[in-house]
Image (cartoon, rainbow, N blue to C red; front, side, top):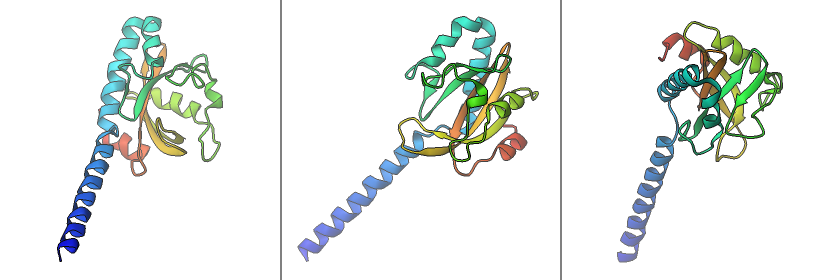
Length: 169
């Protein structure tokens, strides 16, 4: 009887630990509201300080990288990724940004969404910092002077259409 109670207690403790761990992982995922707030703040900084501010967006551990995401800066006029915490992506031609599942180009969709009055959302499959494989990302993009500023949330349920309709601002 004592051994059975011990096993039961260990089982409950393991379940609680797993539940807490899952909760901690969920807490480490950026939300759509956080993404909008960061993109708005980043756009303000880019407009005010232009090229001087751009180096901050290249830092993996800087103020523009948080939880499981980061802010990146596009130059839609010249068709390049102006600033990005992944050195392989920084400087890429936007036409070369491809959905990791479909191989469909999405750089032009980011630029088109940025032209909307309050910015917009774009869905694509992309690599997630600290995770293996490709993950569904929904990015919010907003014009910021001569550049476009974006960040995304990794989520399998949110859609660009629903977020645009909600106008999460």
